[in-house]
Every structure is written in structure tokens, then in C-alpha cells.
Image 1 (cartoon, one colour):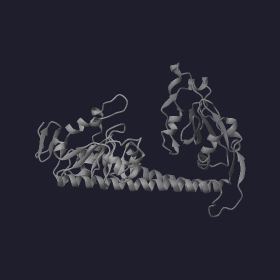
Image 2 (image 1 turned 90 degrees about the vertical axis):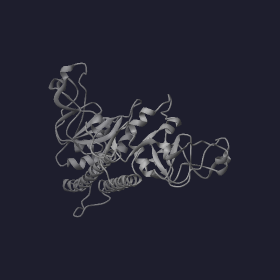
Image 3 (image 1 turned 120 degrees about the vertical axis):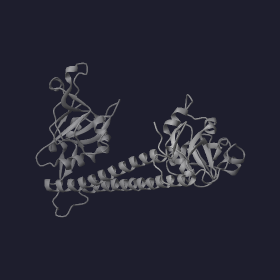
Image 4 (image 1 turned 30 degrees about the vertical axis):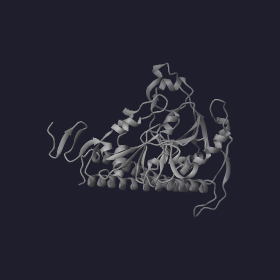
Length: 410
């Protein structure tokens, strides 16, 4: 295949002509870490930040500034640990292989990390993103029977593709800007979810009333709000019961919704014969399916008629009950449902327990008004989730294109 002008063929594939494929030790100094003796209390709790496997979550950010454990100058001087300068790239090479960040201040690390002090020809943030893009490479380099590990000689022999320094900085800046966007969306999404939880607590208990509503709420059992039905499983040894056109729901179909409200399909389906010979029942559309075994209280509104397995209790609402309100009301009871569960092998809540479970509900118009508010909040959350997913996909695409030179920024 003919090469594009400005590109060359190398052992790692096609890269720009002004990029180099070289041993990383040509442009950075490799340093290892160590653990001071845990038997000597004088070595611990000092002023030296010491990165260990306790800190791998913190390595998800571009900088790590604090550590779970610290050591003293005495601990540093009486071990093989080294105090490394701010800006050092720290890479987790054991257990959580591939976590990488930059030291915000001078720090030491345990022996579970490979550390690179970048020279003038290598930008440390560029190296962080390059390492994060090398997931498949790290998997091929792992060894060890107990913990996944990449041994230090591997890091000494490692070769990387290095653009000119100005392009490294431009790539790092572009990816950093995308990370800022992702983090801001993630924080906003967390805030929106917290606000929704607080609003649910207030509206579903009557602590806060919407304008125009002042009547009292009535205490009712769940059996007064909906017809509660169970599920079942046709014999899995009879092929004629399976792969039909009737939706058959299992808990994984609900947990797979990731908190979203509506269920319109299931992974497995049964035939009319399977329905007729088993204890499962056909639940009409616009009902609520709720997990009641092992995973408790996960709810969804089914947009189509379906059946469920025996790990569900399903609610067919009566007249005068807003389906969306009932969905939110049941979802808010999850922890209380769990506290009622019995079963020595796994948690389970029974139909009789749910039937007598009491809640307070307003008149239909107020139910609908409450559900409208919460649904609007859900829609806003879904919009943010979509934006966040797109931003993450954008970043992955950018990393693939920028770190291979297929797209040039300078």
C-alpha cells in the first residue's frame, strides 16, 4: 500500500516522518520504588507522600497530590525508596496495571510502580496519555501467577513513538481539554442525581407540596394500589418453550437499564406454549416490574406486555394510580424492602410482605404532578448521560488519531 506523503513505515506501523520510535530510556530516566520496613514505626506517618496500591484510584487523574500513606525521612533513608521530583510519571505495574499519573509534588513510591523522570525531549502529560492508550500492550507484557505484574526490565527495554516536543504538548493539551469537559459533565451529572434524590425524598413523602395542592394524603397498602403478580420460568430443557415472541424478563434486563425507567425488550423470549405450561404470567404494558430476589427493589415500567422469571414481583396499577408516580414511589422504598427480606441463601421479599406494605399517597392529580416533576429531572439526567458518553467516545477517538499521528495538530 502506498504511503501518504509525510509518513514512513516502521516496526510499529506507519507514523509521521518526523516522529521517532525509540527506547523510552533515551528520553526519560526510569526509577523504581520500595517499601520501608513496616515493623519500624519511625519510618511511617511522616511528611513524605508515598504512593502505593492504596492510591490507584487517584492515578485516574492527570495529577496525584495526596497519598493514603506517608513515610518519614528516616524511612526514606533506610530503604531503597527514592524521593522523586514533581512531574515524575508514575505507572502502576502490579495488580491494577496501567493506572498512570503525574506527581504534583516530590513523592516516593512502593515497588509496585515504575516511574519515569522525563527529559527535555519528552512531555510528561503526553507520556501519561500515551501510556493510557496502550492497554492492549500492557496485557501482553503482564506476567506473574498471583498478581498481574510487568517486571522492571520490561520498562527499561520499552520503546515508544515520540513526536516533536511541540506536537507532544499540543496533543496533551487537546486531550487535557477533553478531560476537563468530561470531568465537568461528570460532576454536573452527580449533582443532578443528588438533587433528584433529595426532591424524591421531599415530594414522595409530602414534606414538600407542589403549588395548588393541599389535601391530605391517605395511607394505603400496596395491594390497594396495584394487582401484585409473580413470575416463573418454563423448563429450560424444553426447546419448544423458548425463542418465541413473548418478552421474558430477568433481573439482568433491569440492571442493564442502569437506572433508566423504561423497559422495551428482553434478552430472552418464550413461546405461547412456554407461557401456558409455567407459573409465569403475562403482565400488561405500562405495569411495573420489580426485582424481588437477590437484587431487591430495582424497578422498570414495561412498554410492552411481558413475563418475568420468579425473581420479580410485578405491579399492575389500579384506576386512580399514576403509573409513573408508583414507579418513583416503589423505587424510593428499596432500602426498606431490603430490610424486610428473608432467606438464608439470598435476599428475597414475598408477595404477602409487599401486599401489606403501607405507603402514603395523594390524589391522582397530585400523583401526576409529582411524577411530571421527577420525569423532567430524569430527562435532564439522560441528556447529560448522553453528552458524557459522547465526550468519552470523542476522547477515545482523539487518542487513537492523535497518538498515532493520523491527525496532526502542528
